[in-house]
Length: 384
Ligand code: NAD
Ligand code: MG
Image (cartoon, rainbow, N blue to C red; front, side, top):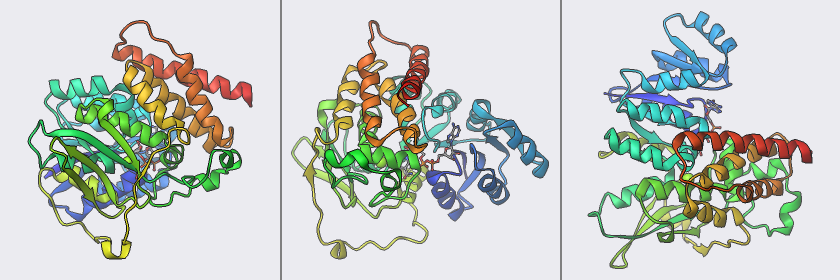
């Protein structure tokens, strides 16, 4: 029986994870979970899963839910996230929260020897060096949930170490992949939220359209697989059928293919190195799909992708700034405070505004994340 802490249980990945875990009640048990704001959905999950511990977003939520579920222990905010992730019984923490709020509970869980099934890519972008060092020190596995990284992980698992030449990450192109830069000026939030292939949380859907998501994934891949940026390629693949590929030193390509169903990589992260049948398997027929297309990524069209390589290679606090500025900007766009193109402008400005003299520590990176948020929030107020 694998005991799971599910951080961000009410989100898109969270709900898919509940589906996966409850399909095999003799193999998985969600012993703790967290959610931030949707108390109705959260209460339904508590009812269904009967966890020992629940982390919530506010004191009011705690008071209300504690009265309704007297057998469950509750915590609030960061403390609730950390407690849920480090509960004695937990074997693996599935990090399905959005944003850098995932860092502290992830680090705390690693230090307590818990494996991490990682969906929360922002954590690795912000602090990949320290997360991976801690994972090694405490001998825990970081198992990718992101579909591209799961694909690469699955391909790599067929190989002896030392054969890898390159990674090829595929990108669907997001909601605006067929628009040119001039056409981006007047796009709306509603249009941005219509992803062609995947149904996901709002922030990642915006990130997919700006190609920030692919940028974050490049940095995520660098840390997960310990590979230099020059050996990470991105190709546009509109069908989202090939989830990603690896290239071996003899020139062989290995790819992982499948339907757009996040339950698959979630389940593999939980069953690795074994596999289980997936419940309600989605139909997948390559003869119906017929064609798979691959195109080069246009860095001028998608400047956030190019910027990911720049900040990734610089290292230190640069990826932290890139991620934090985007979290604030993407949310401001979601709240109708800025226009679509301002997301890119703010991220670029924050990265250009940042300088670094010495090597940074984890504590400094956490401070850089905070400062970047404050600065970008101020810019948004000033411009608005
Ligand atoms: P979502 O918005 O649907 O859900 C986010 C979850 O995090 C919710 O449960 C919410 O309550 C919680 N949350 C939000 N803000 C919080 C805060 N400040 N403190 C604590 N909890 C908070 O997001 P999602 O699409 O499920 O994505 C979650 C993570 O998984 C992201 O890092 C995303 O990049 C990654 N991811 C998602 C997908 C996908 O298909 N949705 C695919 C790959 C990776
Ligand atoms: Mg992905």
